[in-house]
Image 1: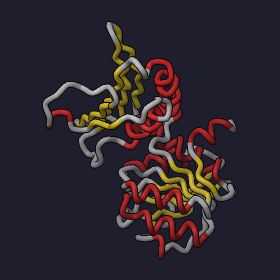
Image 2 (image 1 turned 180 degrees about the vertical axis):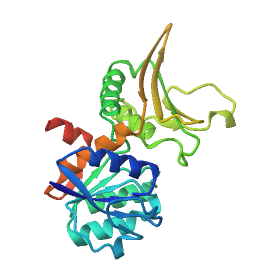
Image 3 (image 1 turned 90 degrees about the horizontal axis):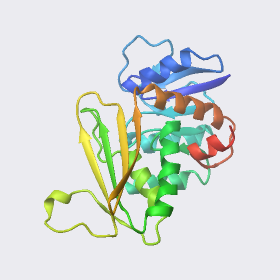
Image 4 (image 1 turned 60 degrees about the horizontal axis):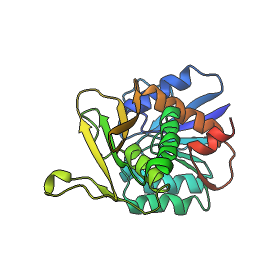
Length: 252
């Protein structure tokens, strides 16, 4: 039985993770971390990591970027692996995660969906074949409550594609602010926010007289919650290091 501490338990993703865990018999949530407590959860909720006195095997974090330092401090002090699912981190915060992983086990991914990680793999393959002669654009769509743009998944896709190109591309986020032709060595990244869109990502390879589009559409937040719970079980008792979906998939 894997004992989970759920950070961000009172949010929408926290509620979804709770439902997923309740339907399984190989894990349980023993404590939640959230400034809000709706009073309807079956486990104790603490307003901060520093006030949590319940031990867990792993931490699942669906909270806010501003809580990263307290998460890492608690995880290191308690020796508890952390599954970091929050997005919108600055470059400095991502560096902090990577540095912390030198002494503690951390699972970090901008998207916990198995399908998205397949999309990343397919995009890398396409980029290695088409990248020299096709323009590459990424379009991501999310609900109107999402605060960060572009999405962490769009940046994951761009980074993975960049690894397969001979020349490191420049990311173009704000094409409307300038007048000029598209340069060869760039990846356009575009964000759409509206309604209740859970998450859609298109990777467009536009060449001479042909276009190839790779797409993924999440129908519910359950795919991300299920991925996080699977990662939590995978990370129990892991040694220090930085892990991601590729590591988990390779051991299935």
